[in-house]
Image 1 (cartoon, one colour):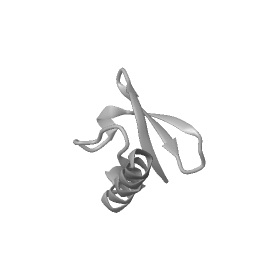
Image 2 (cartoon, helix red, strand yellow):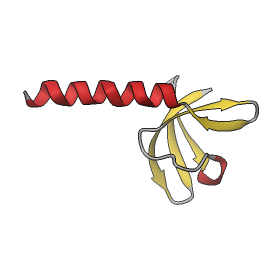
Image 3 (cartoon, one colour):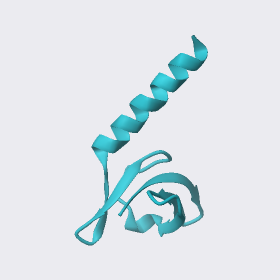
Image 4 (cartoon, rainbow, N blue to C red):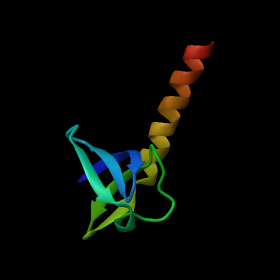
Length: 70
């Protein structure tokens, strides 16, 4: 199971899952350091930051922004 943190609402992170369904996950269940746009994955009973995917998403967004403002 994988997703991207869309936003925080109270004690929940709203996560867009790979199937485009939004899911509320208690912040306390997530690893420290997550923020909006962080990719996460569920492995062996716990949520983990998907660092490779997060970096790829950031690179894609940087390229889009660069193309937009050039």
